[in-house]
Length: 74
Image (tube, rainbow, N blue to C red):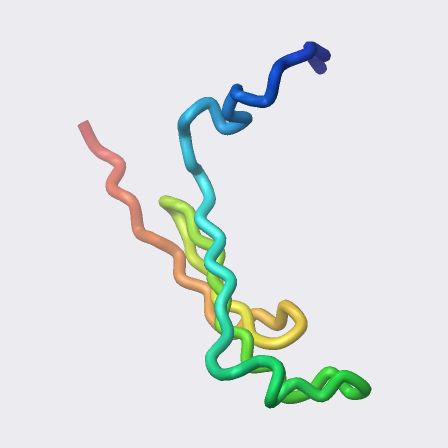
């Protein structure tokens, strides 16, 4: 672990983005979400990297996983 002080202008990712998180709703969240039961959450979010992508619906339920088939060669 390194501890240092900075002024807030340094990017923590060092300019490289390895993970993409896309948080979205499939419809108007406020009109469909049931607060007491947590049902009808129409979330349609994805997390993706170079090697895989996952889609999430309500309450982080995974309903899709795609694994990229990489090429290992010279």
